[in-house]
Image (cartoon, rainbow, N blue to C red):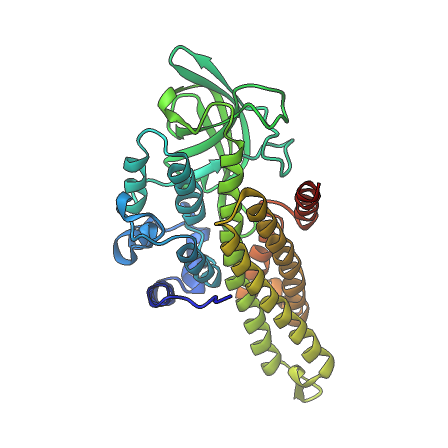
Length: 381
């Protein structure tokens, strides 16, 4: 199978890499995540106006550049190399996925606002008791008049402090873990009854605990059919997992490259430690994990266009490899750097923290192994 990129995709990669090299070096990022805002809105504006990457994956019909999941993969890998914290995943990939696949009322207008950099989204799905089960929901949406009333609590909503809108999963019917009864809504974050508790995450991003208390939403705010939105949620989350796998490639590259460069400079017994055969073997193993992760990530993006079962299996298989690689490469990078690798002043520690978060994001290795097994057994039966 041919995994080569088109000229347009190569140009996109070069444009993103060039901009980040000029405006998103380690010191600039470190200053941004320590600021009160935690991000740089001017960078988000540049993504929209200078680079046009917020619209790269949207169809021309919606005002985008007519790209797709491969364009997202290219962008996310470059973002991983620079540890970009701006809410591209939540806004372009997740919200864009719901708006494109679910086609709610006003989708075209919202997509236009995303492309222009005027709207940012956060995905309010996870709940404290739910672990990685997308249908495990205590948040409810009760029918009232021509609209709905939301009540509930969402945990660790990444990017919520910067969001203008929230994509919220809620139960409109069924029991707490039923596959049926799941609905999705677009909620204005400033709506009456929405409250947040914001905090930084270990990898430099910002998140919120979000509470909904009698929040009124219009019927037009619903995405997809009432009570039957779980397949849509699973599809969009699979696309988000594939994009996160692509981001991890950039993180893993920097962990490997940074460790290789350090071992060539660090001397022990008068020689660089890179000359020690046991460490050479260790760095080869790190490189193998990176190369396997690249192949599995490319495969997952190809599988996004197949049926639900093959898509889910491909994404879970990739996430298993990515989770294992993030742990192996990250931990070995820190070990070979010694204690100084975890200091705030060294970039390698920041890459390790992001790799650690990616390992468990959207599901751990064990979760995706169980998911792959269940999908394979169902298909065999």
